[in-house]
Image (cartoon, rainbow, N blue to C red):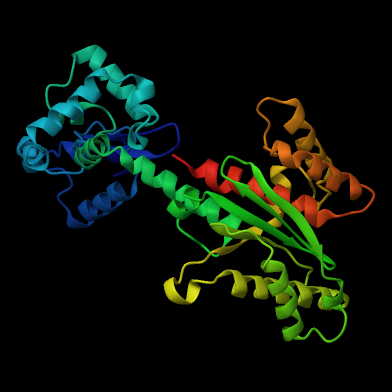
Amino acid sequence: MEDETLSKGKWDSHKEFTFWNIATYPQPGLYQECGEAAHLEALHNSCCRKESTAPEKIIPHVDFSDETAKESGKTFDKLFSSEQQASILHVLNTASNKELEAFKLLRGKKSLNIIEHRKKFGPFQNLESLMNVPLFHYKITIQVCNSILNPETGGKKKKLQESRILRKLIKPEIGRERVKAVNSIVSIVSGTRRLAWAHLDRKLAVLDWQQTEYCQLMKGSYLSSVYLEEISSIISKMPKADLYVLEKTGPSFQNPSLFPVLLHFHMTEAMLYALLNVTFAQDGRHQVLSMNRSAVGKHFELMIGDIRTSGKEVVKQLLSESVLKDEPRVFFPPEKIVRYRQMFSSTEHNRVEELYDSLLQAIAFYELAVFNTES
């Protein structure tokens, strides 16, 4: 039995026995006994057939039936009008590799395969002929045709990315269109002793920039009525704007000794949100936003690890550029530049970070949230 079996098969280089003569071409009268035949069949099924010469069934690399393939031309006619088909074919037959890669579904080998197919076989005569290109089956072909007709799909992705950026940058969330339509903002930064604001328009012209002291707020029992009176008085001096942008920061809850400071920041923020959102009860639209402090620091390269350093030198440079450059980054009105320089000089020996930060925050808001998301 063993000799006869070996005569009908062979061992490959991995010691795996391959049956091919017996399996493919059974001979009459061979292995008549049921036991031997069953043993052979079980052994045959358990062996690897790496070197088998038996004909293999070839399955085309498509995900639709032959019947669907025959009807594909009619399917494309149903899905796309003659004008749409002509537009798609124009792109497929004339676009360069770089232009084809502008469509997400055609990036990588797919665009190269289209170019290669055009070189070998000439221009595409119909949409179903695209399925002759490697990597293109029926479903992909339909998706590609739709993406060519609707390139705004990429625009939708860009909008989603921009929305994600805005969510990380500012809270609460407001629509991109509202942000893009902003004409002026008041940037507000509060500290333990003072509150500063900068009023800038979308041309980055400084319309107002000042600070005020409120030392007594952290003295006593943190009465809400005292905060209301003090913050209301400060807001009465602020100019009107489309949006009011607050700095979002605060010490960690993990440090109990800083709880009074944290309480002060939250009470001040709550008062600003309540008093500046004057129409919220009627229309539900937020006019007050909080901006990520670290994002502003990164924008001006002020971060050392998780620590934000002073923006004093950056502000000083901006003031100098407004005088020395024809097109400075920030425009300080000529009638106010002297006043602002004097204000800066008078605080140069003090750490008046709120004043510096309010200006930098306003600039970062426009450059990161407004200009960076414009189409």
